[in-house]
Length: 196
Image (cartoon, rainbow, N blue to C red; front, side):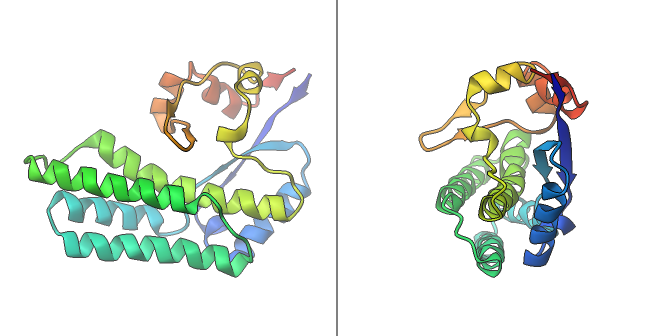
């Protein structure tokens, strides 16, 4: 048995090319860290909140401008690291789908939708995770996203997770909802569970 150490990097650690490469070096210096959790890049969560708010209010012009700012910010960050993030088109399409859902919510008179807002906010962490995974792969750390880990390996790590399967990718739940839907295995991983 070995202990699984979880490394957590905040938004500032994901916010620039230098910070991303530095976080990669930190992981390389600690071979016991095998699960990495990242926050959205610095400022992205606030932009996503403004994006959702604008769309809920029916302000399509502001919503579109913010969407483009989020898109360009992440494309620029990936370019500055010198990597290509193959999953970006899928994530940007998902954000466009959420934009349509927010517009539909506005058209139907909804001014709040917690589930939809959670889905929008999760995009920030997922964009950062995709950039950082690509940096780790380029730095020969052999990183894979949670969606790429075989379910049997997840079960051996302490439980099962029943995320929602989409057409192009598996989306793992996040936050407290993830702990509820995943039988608490994420919480056990956070506590450095022993894995076989």
